[in-house]
Image 1 (cartoon, rainbow, N blue to C red):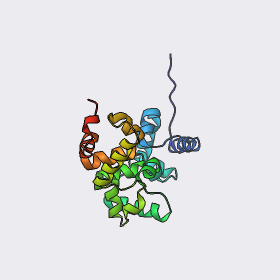
Image 2 (cartoon, rainbow, N blue to C red):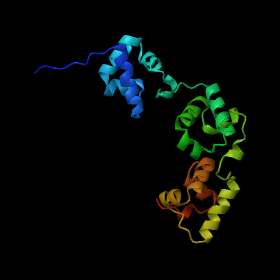
Image 3 (tube, rainbow, N blue to C red):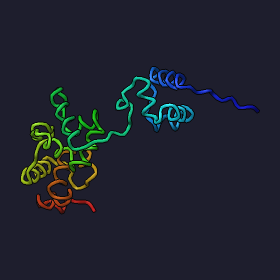
Length: 190
C-alpha cells in the first residue's frame, strides 16, 4: 500500500492555519503537535518556530498561547484592568472567568487576596463572604444548636453551611476545634 504525503509550502502552511482558525480550532503549539504533527513540522521548517508560523499568518501568538508567562507586574496590571472594566474580582468570579490569572496570583503572591492588595485594592470591599471573628463563629454555632441544627458531623456542616465551616476551619483549624471553643465538643460524632 502506497502512502500519500502532503506537499507543504510556506503558502500551504498559512492556508491550513487560516482554515483551523476559521473553524475555531486551537492553534497553540502543543495542540498542533498532537493533532497535526505534519503541519507543526512544516511550520517550524518554513518559519523557524511554530510561533513564527502563527505570526506569518497574521495572528498574534499571545491569543493562541496556552501557557501564559506571568510576572507580579503582569498580574497586578491585569487585576487593575479588570477592575477598571467593572469586572467582579471576588475569588469565585475571578476563578470562573480568569482561572489562569487566579492561579498565577497564587503562585506569585501566595493568594488571590495578596495579589488584590498588591494591585492597591481593598480586598474587604471586593470579597463577597462575610469576615468572621472567633466570637461570631462561636455565637453562630450556639445559635444553630439552639435551633436544633445537627452540628456533630463535619460533612453535612461543610455542605450546608459552607461559609461558617470555612470560617471555623480558618480561625480554629478544624470544625471540631470550633465546636470545642463553643463548648459543644460532646456533640461530635467520632
